View 1: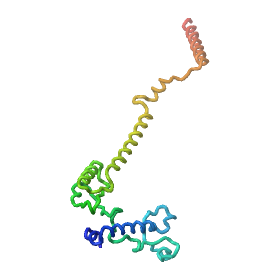
View 2: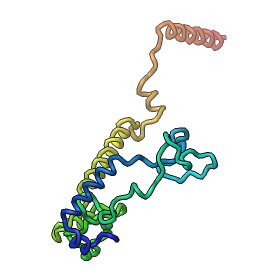
View 3: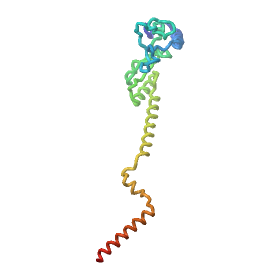
View 4: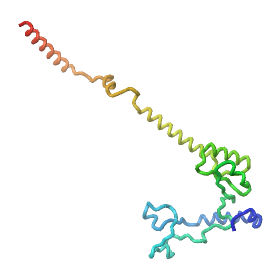
Length: 205
């Protein structure tokens, strides 16, 4: 029997709260159901898959190995699928989907793909109707704002390291002339004077 408003009327709110507390204690003792040999192979996903090996000790339920998924680990039927407050989560994508929700039984969950602007509108409409939202848009907006600020800081640092527009290697070389040694200057000047004397002698002849 799935949880309905009729079930709440039959068992009473105190019974629902008792079952929620029992589910909380049972989940604290419930093991993690993972792949067989998940600690040996990192590529295996962190989820459960029934072992099918002929000599699998988990399949044969040998003592000392990880536990298998069994029906006894499930939650009580009356509170199965409810959140910790006893409300039924309902995924919504727009404001119109809030009309069918009951504030005393349901809690709204904004779909992951909804943008921040629409999520803020859904949160505002939910507060007006008295419906709770498990993932309000304020946290999402703050997360996106911090990410944008981080990207802006990276862009500013890239601009600071980038060269000035129009500046090339040749301009840098012109701006920074190489130092000239005085001995080399004297040698060049002497060679020039020697060439001038030779030319003047030839012109005289």
